[in-house]
Length: 139
Image (cartoon, rainbow, N blue to C red; front, side, top):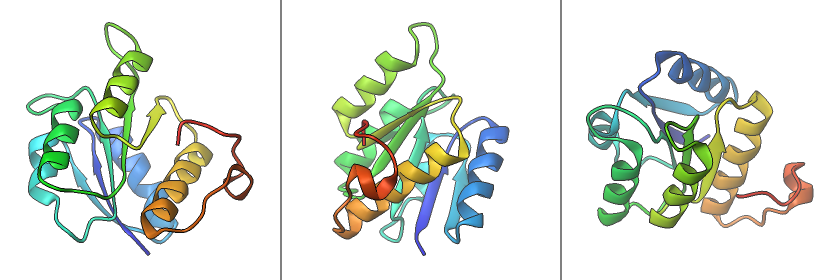
């Protein structure tokens, strides 16, 4: 399957996402902040999933840096918000290079749908709302 890098400072979310994606057969690397994520990022990574609000190097900085470094694979940005709420952060993430966004809390189904869509996009496969089972969303 694919190699997915998850970056989140919340150990619960790391464990949850790791479990969902590993159960689907993906290889998963985990990092607790953007610095650690950048150290684990290489050309073998097929998908980056990053939280936005983290200590040390937060998600917006991480997305901008990996795009500057030439990472062309899909990025999913996720957040539960902060002082201004999740939607503003997620739209900013899109603007600086995230391909898709995921608001916390999320369901297993949402994670799988958006992950499948992003991996299909990166492999060049056609993805339609009908094939993902999700109406036209922010993918």
